[in-house]
Amino acid sequence: MTDCGIWLVRTESEALALALQKQLGGVLYRPWLDTAVSQKQQFADAYRKHPQWLMIAAGGIAVRFLDGLPQDKHSDPAVVVLDEAGRFAVSLLAGHEGGANRLAYRVANAIGAVPVITTATEALKPLVVGIGCRKGVAVQQIAAAVRQALGGRQLNEVREIVTIDLKANEPGLLEFCELHDLPLRVLASSTVAERPWVTKPSDWVQQNVGLPGVCEPCALIAGSRGRLIVPKMALDGVAVAIVEDTLM
Image (cartoon, rainbow, N blue to C red; front, side, top):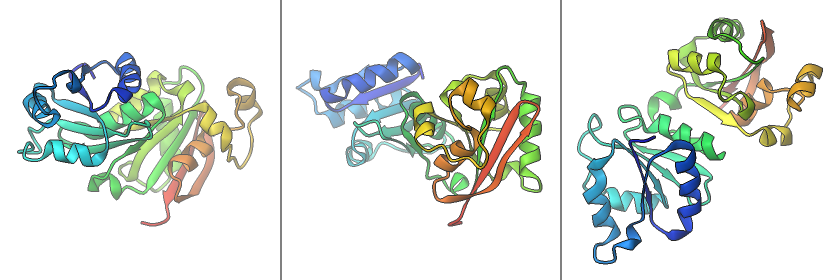
């Protein structure tokens, strides 16, 4: 996120912005320091300086600041809006072309927020895939387990891959998501512990991760309006569960 501008509108957002900058990089803007120029004008002047923007503000403020600035989805900077409580990271502008969708996931994963993606391509994908895995599994193992769980369903029906924070940097999992252009959503272990929905608890996972299971609760939490269509399936150190939206 080094090429990202982080725009604050109030000093109260600084702690959140600094936490994000520490994890993801980026350039902080504190427009209140220039009292001679309105914040909206300052943002307009800076708008083309970065290919991506994270605005920590209300959605209405972001919309007003952007008024008249976007020109073309292929050249506009991506814009993600994060509320000051750090609850929702909303991909607002240039979701696909500018990378706002991916930025929303990165911001959400960094602070435990919910990524909000509204582009039509993602909205029509009904499957959420929860994954738990042993340390060091290869991308081929991840791919084989996901294919087994999907059965006759297709990978292009998958909206997102979900796992816990302890597995957020697994090289095989990251490579799989990158290879298939799938966003990875990371849930805090504490969040999963509060909703440990499993069809069959795992003694091994309980002993090594401190949870009765990973893939099923991850899929169910992320796909909160769906139903579990594939309970935990394990293959070669990788466990997969699939939830399908019921309102599609």
